Amino acid sequence: MSSVKRKRNVLNVKQKLEIFQKLDNGESASPDAGDVLNEGNTISHSAALQSVETLLDYLGQRGFDYGDITAVRKMCVDIQQEMNKEQKQRRIIDFFKAVNVKRKIPSLMLYSIANVMQPVDMAINLVLVCFLLFVIVFIDFGNARDEEPFQCHELYQFNATVNNLRGDFKSPFYDEGEYPNGLWCEYRINAPPGYRLKLTFEDLDVDPSDFCGQDSLIIYSGEKEEIISTVCGKDKPMPIITDPGVNKLHFLFRTDNMAAGRGFHLRYEAGTDFAYCEGGLRECGNKKCFDPAAHKCNGVDDCGDGTDEEDCNLPLATSECGDPPITPDTVFGGRSPDRIIGGQEVIPGSWPWQVSLQNRYSTFSHSCGGSLINAQWVVTAAHCFKGNPYASNWRIHLGKHHKYKTDPQEQIRYGERLIIYPDLTGDNIQGVIDFRHDIALIKLNAPVQFNDVVRPACLPSLGWTLPTGTLCYATGWGETRGTGFNHALKQTDVSMMPKSNCSYEEDVQICVKNRVGFQSTCHGDSGGPLSCKLGGKWFVMGATSFGTMSNFMHGLCAMPEQRTVFMKMSNNVDWIEKMIQMYS
Image (cartoon, rainbow, N blue to C red; front, side, top):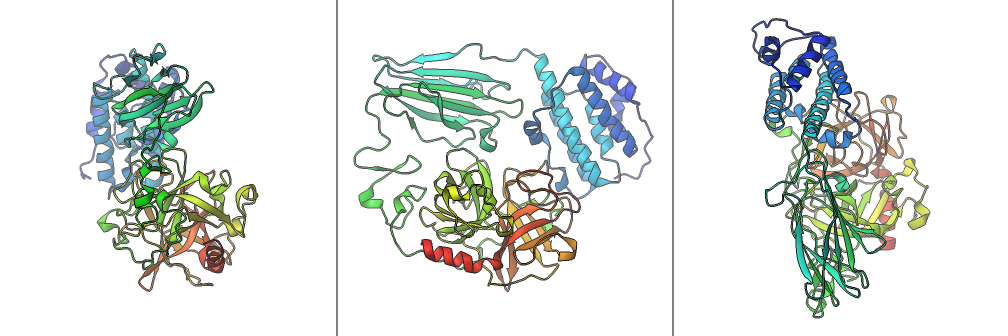
């Protein structure tokens, strides 16, 4: 930062509010308004807070709705990754200059951002900056609402007839390259009685989010309007065929006020004799097809989800545990460690035992993490299954790095058996989650195929205990709360805490704390591995269970003195081995 002393030029609340209103009405403001960013005014912490209050007053006068925090959070850029305060400030200013050009946000909004970067208390400072990012986006929403938005004023209906059984349709402005914000568009396809419908995705580019909860295309089937698919992202789904007797499809395309994509291009066809697989081919769980004579139990995952390798009783492949071909970045690669909340994006494939547990029937539905411990078993946390206790409802992703797209060596399996400590399955799991024994095992429908990014972790020996201060790593795709890289697997380093500094039960749990602060595991990281390198091998010493100031269903994460409690793996090794032997 320059050592030149800058003049103190602080506008009071009333003056700033007047400037906001003038700029918003297209009027010119005072010279102070044009110079504040260039001058880099240094103000007190209380004045920075006053800037926030001014923005709130301004938004209140405009009648803004603060409900859509989920959408706004995506705009909270990762300012923590830079090495020093000057880089942080420059990153924020450059970001908002770019946004201002694209969205025509009143330029004085940059004033508060520049000012808030000045306080010495960087921890509170980051919270203020993140909050201001939210505010700017709400103002952007308001500017967008001042323009006449594109609306879907009617239901778009397509009738397949006996003489014209095929057709296609696209999302609004698909040919122009980007759909508008704030859409609520409905489409219907009707086929003649006795016909079924086949839907094929020619193209899909819809801004992704968890469970496609923001921009999405929802597909309903039949008179009962049952949801059969909700899609977003760029991976084209397999064709959809309605059940026999179902000749209607209903579509809802909804978009938020954030990022956008091309949209979708769909083709439909009506017929009486549709099948996913023909000519003696058999259907995979993912609707692909395989030749049972050539591919069943051949040791190769031809389906891509292990369906063709189910119930084969072949010997399990083995791989050396805890020895990743791609070395994890445990020295931060020269990058800042104080940027999972906080943490850093991992080197792709460097934690090859990490898995993502997702709802089998939902898109981008990451719910918990887990650890691969052999070719067909994953260990995770029991509380992940409190609301969904059936193995077949779970889809397990291995070799995954990106949250919202398929990676080149990614493998998918389904749950075949779910076991909660001590030996609970199915309906017996409901309401019987014991955080003293927060451990579960999932048997995969078929063995995985080991490669550079899919390998097992080592299990510790019974009774192993790590000394206070031992450094380990937690990984996951959970909440990042504005700290960036929510699209990718992240890691954070943690150290063992003594009983005197943490409330936990030593015989069944491990307590850790991040050495930097303001970073920890959070919602969505539950069940993920605590990986510790001992004697040249990586051991999974725990599974994420809960935070000491909250839990992983609700509450705060990454607070300054927060500890994270992991299920203690070395206390459960004998149970793990017993269950695997019993159900293999």
